[in-house]
Amino acid sequence: MKAYLSKLEWNARVCTSFFPFWAIPYTFYMFYLSLYLKKAGISDVQIGNIMVASNVAALFSSFIASPLVDRLGRRWATLLFDLVSSVLPALLFLFWPIYEVALIAMVLTGLNRIMSVGYYLLMIEDASEENSVVSMNLFNIILVAAGLLTPLAGLFVMHWGVVRTEQAFLLIAAISMASQAIIRHFLLKETPTGKMVQQRMKKEGQFWTFPRFFAVYKQVYSTVKNDHAMLRAVIINALIYVYFSLGTTSSLLFAPFFIDFVKISTSQISLIGGLYSLGTLLAMIVVNPHLKRRNLYAFSVWSSLLSLVGFALLFFCPKGGLLFPLLAVVCISVSYGVLKTLADAVLAVETHGEHRAGVYAASFLISSCVGIVFIKFTSLLYTNNPGWLLFVCALILSGVLVLSLKKQGVSDGIV
Image (cartoon, rainbow, N blue to C red; front, side, top):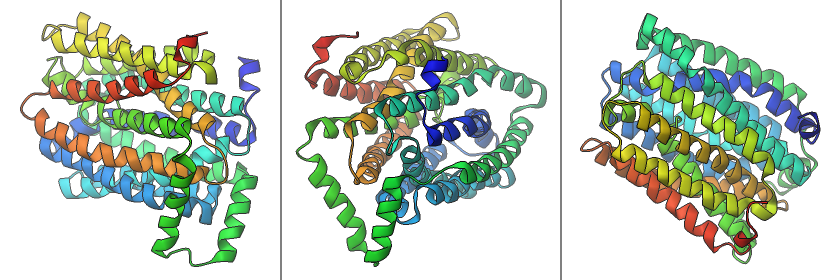
């Protein structure tokens, strides 16, 4: 482990060290957010609209992310949009849990695409490929490890109820997220490429013109159109992020699905969340250190297939029981543990050059466009039968499977 961590360079060390102070409170409040909003009188259809609003904002922020991050610099863009997209939404959910304000809060969370571009570039830009893969894996390990505490959150819910517990989680989240963002900012260093691009944009001027924004994506298109490996990486990354927002514990439909479709209780749902995090973490610790450039797509194939098996188990499991849902969650969570790191790693190793920020923004742009359609479509179908959530998730990961199978060299195997 010491040798593994030694591959991290300074910015990646800082980011991963402070990330738990964001990930733990976020995981706690996000897991129970949909149930908290439903207690406040918000319907399933309105929750679907809230998720769509977040993706519409993510679509817009993805469009402007690259030039904004280039112009502001990686450090300042990360700080400003971390505060706007993380701290403000938690406060809005805390003090005004009504539909209209929840829409505004989720629109603000959609702006985290700008923060994410800056944050990822701080970790991987001008750094080695080993640093990129290790930092992305540790980032995801920390995020998932926070979910292991979900059963503890369930105990608070049993004692205080969903509303009071969620209010406490939201307050703690706002304080913790703001503190880590500010302290981290003063420890990070702007990347050499970031400095170069920022200085060039200052000299050129006319930053806020629409041609400037479109020029970024024109350059990205020119970069990607003849690079099939990069194009495949962008699409796989985008699809897995759509799945992340729709079918994992980060989805507002995750907890309601197990209550509405699988027919388990509100207290038992915390066990599902804890097991999901445990399976994902196990994959990231045991499997992901073996991820290399040569076997990324082979791992993608097997992980996608494992998820499809898990979806089938959930669909056919007896209602009200726990055994089959737990087995299904093990399959799905282990698969997701590999896919999440793989999505970040494949984009990190297949992208290069000063237009890297634009490529990341383009991937977020694609995931937002596809996510808006899939989330709205799924939320409408969900009201008739929650099982549609499984079908849509299976469709998304089938796309990842097909793209991975088409990649030359998959036959090299998992070595």
